[in-house]
View (cartoon, rainbow, N blue to C red):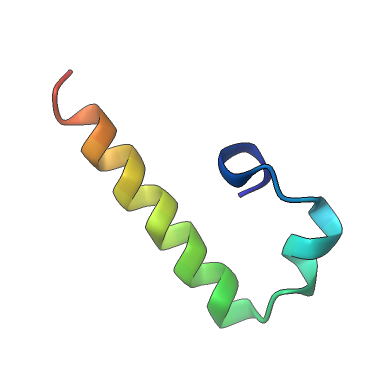
Length: 38
């Protein structure tokens, strides 16, 4: 999340677990879409 969204580590760790999982899912979707054309 820090790599993709440039968020500080402390901000990521302050997120509730479920919200962090949702963001990880969003990143996975973005990566999948980016890799479709390869």
